[in-house]
Amino acid sequence: MKNTAKRIGILTAGGDSPGLNAAIRAVGKAAIGEFGWEVLGFRDGFLGLAEDHWLPLDKPALSGILTVGGTILGTSREKPHRMEIDGQVRDMTDTIAANYRRHRLSALVCIGGGGTHKNALRLVKAGLNIVTLPKTIDNDVPLTDATIGFDTALGIASEALDRLHSTAHSHHRIIVAEIMGHRAGWLTLGAGIGGGADVILIPEIPYTPEKIAAAIARRAEGGRANFSIVAVAEGALSHETAAAFAVAKRKKQQARTAEKRKIAKAELKELDLRHAGNTLRLARQLEELTGLEARVTILGYVQRGGTPSVTDRILATRLGSACVSLIKEGRFGVMVAARGNTTTAVPITDVAGNLKLVPTDHEWVRAARRVGTCLGD
Ligand code: F6P
Image 1 (cartoon, rainbow, N blue to C red):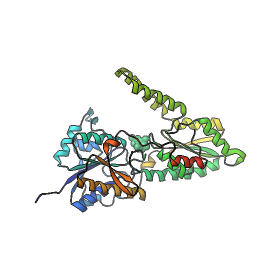
Image 2 (image 1 turned 90 degrees about the horizontal axis):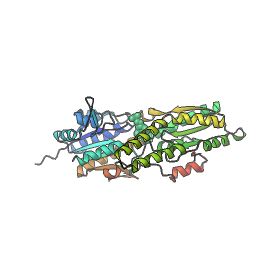
Image 3 (image 1 turned 120 degrees about the horizontal axis):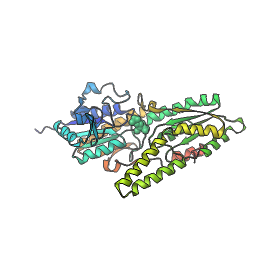
Image 4 (image 1 turned 90 degrees about the vertical axis):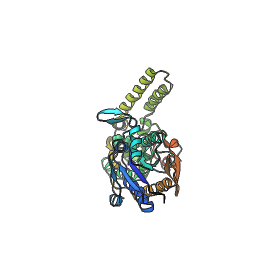
């Protein structure tokens, strides 16, 4: 009789997010419980596959991890084609493919966000059977309703805004809370709406400090509310900075020579560097423009830590178990996406290199405006 038992690999890559362990557990339990497959967990993202660091994910290893934050496999942002090995940057794609074959893997499950999808596509092109699951607190992976970790981070960030309200109110201050999300505004917009921020600033809608100050001043008119909560995305840009980025990006696209491309890239890097500290600068500007005292709270990695929300546990379990069905059917080179009450497979080629940003006419944006929230424009 033909032996149909399979061995699959799994790794988590990119920034960690709550719900990764729930996804590992779902893939592992469905693979072992339903089909009797063997599951290997590679450590620290693609690095583990390159260096052949792995652990068996048997039933005991998968037990008790549903509610645990982070990832039991570890993670890294290492790229297969540019990996630092023994102090040297090397292309490890062939080594990864060789290790995959040596372990006689039938498939590799890669759980990650934007960077992971680009890397996964490289491995698809190298001939590996890949299925990906979308995870990131930024919610910026296209073609899926949601990503694993977003809901938990949303809860943490909106609770933080709730808590900042009472202290801002007591001291008649502006509190500027910086929220993660890289170049996407989903987390700030959602947390800002849920946490009742007075001002929400996202990368997709460039802001003007004077307009924010005017909104804060309006709130204070007649001694009504002499405080304000400003939820600002780490990637939010003033009109001025957004224009400078647009010029530099256009220069890079239009550069005809390697020299010109290098200059344009350096300009973009310089702008990125200057953008660090943007939230502190904004707080100082608002202080000057309104005469109110301003304080800054950077929520940072708190947003990625701790136990996943129930919504993320359910999402991770749905996507993880659907992933095993796809492997069983022999469907590879796809990401398992959440679509309404179901899951669907979308080609990794349609995901890699693309970002899901907030459309400026999105329902969340319109709803925020209608309840009087200032979006800085
Ligand atoms: O992609 C998730 C994320 O937390 C972003 O929101 C943030 O910009 C980035 O990762 C931080 O990356 P790192 O963990 O490498 O500092």
